[in-house]
Image (tube, rainbow, N blue to C red; front, side, top):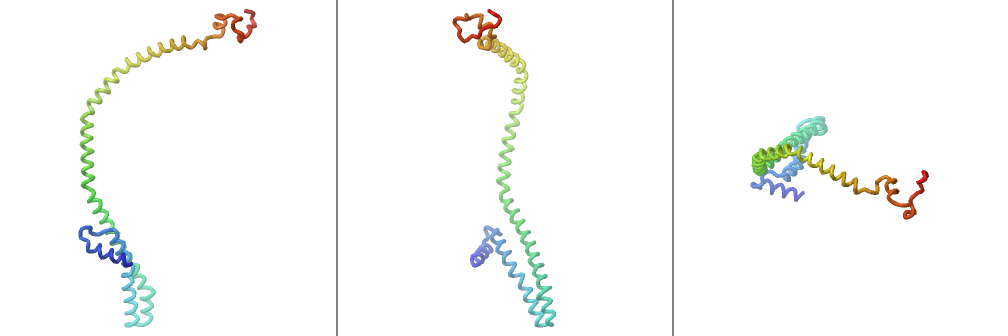
Length: 179
């Protein structure tokens, strides 16, 4: 509690920083104590200046209602202060955000300036595409023929058997047709 009081006094007289989050928290805690004072004062006055019934009414009904109204009102006021504090924080960060945005706009202007050249390059590449596809198809056909010749192991078994004799291939199966 002593640290909070020191923080409250330090933040109240801190002109450079203004209203801070710690100050708002300390004020909110202080509101709970201060809001109870009217409850106690009016209850004591009701007992002194009026009957016991009015003292009990103030102590048990009107006093708590006044306390809730005061705490609620201060909570609303502090909520408004929080909004203002957040707004002030955002406003202090606004110039840096504007500088970043300005730099990004400059970058975009440069990119937009290069866009016509990029579109022209893209159009040229699209115009060349049919020639490239034709060339690729020719290369694929050429490679397919080379691959067919290179894959001799996939050749039909009869062609292989006819190129060998049965004597030099002990693994070759016997042909039922009587070759």
